[in-house]
Length: 361
Image (cartoon, rainbow, N blue to C red; front, side, top):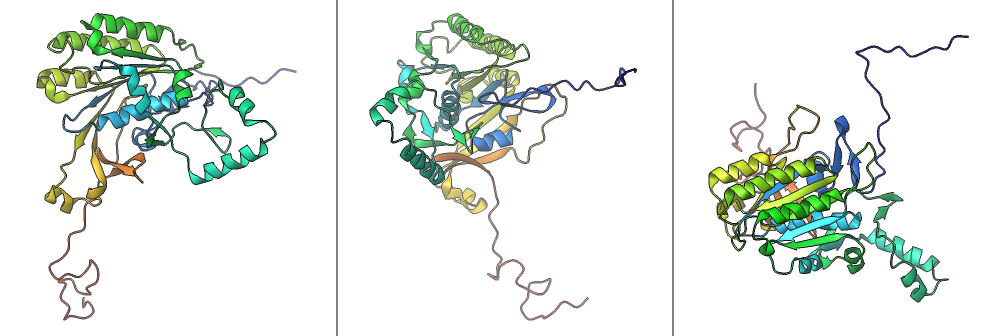
């Protein structure tokens, strides 16, 4: 008996087996794209899933406020929670000390009660032995038996030390780099140790660079060297399982150089501080007193598609929920009060006069 074969043609779509999304810290999107979490749940939703794997993310800093550090800390903490290798570079003498300022995962009341019940069941093992047995185990946040793709972080509490000690974290001081050639080699070596993408991804890496063009660096006045480094970094990241997160103060470089840097970014964001007493802005926006700053989305990465990403909004307010976790919200215009003092829709006439009764058409 002849077997029935499926009809194939040159126009038939190839339904190959889609990779599973069970990889820790990664999520598969449309058109074969792979996302890596930014560490901010709201930012992941805005960008359509997170940062594209193999992309260069650039943040334009505001010299008046370090709001870019909030995004940088969450980005690095998310990598530590997912046991992902991290390369961190900053213009400080001791960049490893910055790891102690990274936030820890935010634990809700339901999770606390669940953890307390689980600890009561395990009282048969002495706490001393339990401590040593679980000391070298990776810390993985789970909810309802599933690994969290993006966690919420408590900015008031530092991350656990065993997460820093148990992960591969490399720290580089940009002050020790007389030129960017050595730093480029360090990035290349870090990326070469990550497994190449051969259809099956086992892990991903993160590169976090703080204030690339800081004035205290020796290469500060070498615009073309910094441009060449960013171009090389983008090329290296594109062919690896990593995401490069780079911040720079745009006001410290010339407008032409800043435009070239922005053009190289796959995802381009900017942060801006809000004045403490701006009465015009306070009357215009609701929740002005709770805002820390503004986040603007200038460009969103597009991989394997020519369709542009249409955002609901391009500017969002940066807030701290209960003074702990970082949240992003759309800007809402405050209601404008009428001269009569009555709220909208209370009057029965078109003119707003209280003398008229029902409308007469």
